[in-house]
Length: 230
Image 1 (cartoon, rainbow, N blue to C red):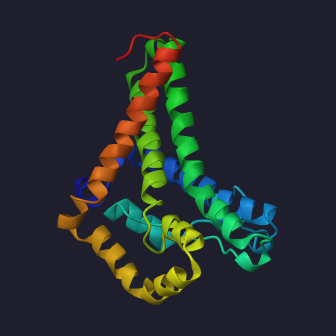
Image 2 (image 1 turned 180 degrees about the vertical axis):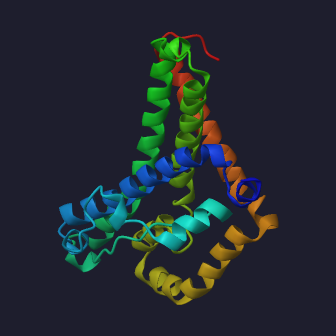
């Protein structure tokens, strides 16, 4: 057990809550891409069975394993054919942004529910220490993780959604240059992710920002419900 704890990003006791979080966060993220692509006239994802909240069709096994042991992973990207859109650039931006925005909404929803549990006295009424700890662990993982996915996916580097948004917004000559350089900018992305020294100045600040966002929304909701701010 101790050796497994050293391998995993989260302690073994918290692993179930992390797994639940990534199942919800990744599934909703990919579903959002598929839903809006279909809504705007591209049925590609729907015909491939990707417009669903069934986690099994969105998960990439290697990406999930890597997430558990390295803190970075991925789901199966939803295929989108922008040629099917009546306004490819505008609708492309919306489809790309739908995934990160879905995680933003999940983070806000998680903060709201957590605050409601405090404001209504539910947290104070939980006598079982293990259950109380489990609730804290779940929201302590679910909220910042979704805010992190929102922020992280807006980075304008391939293969992230932020890059696709910039690509759709950019003028045609700029888009052409971006596509030529894409294979090299992917290496920049990989360096940022996998070199520990760089992660301290790139990924870690984003993680801290995500945690702060979660805390800010939680405290804001507590104030709205008239509960004493912790």
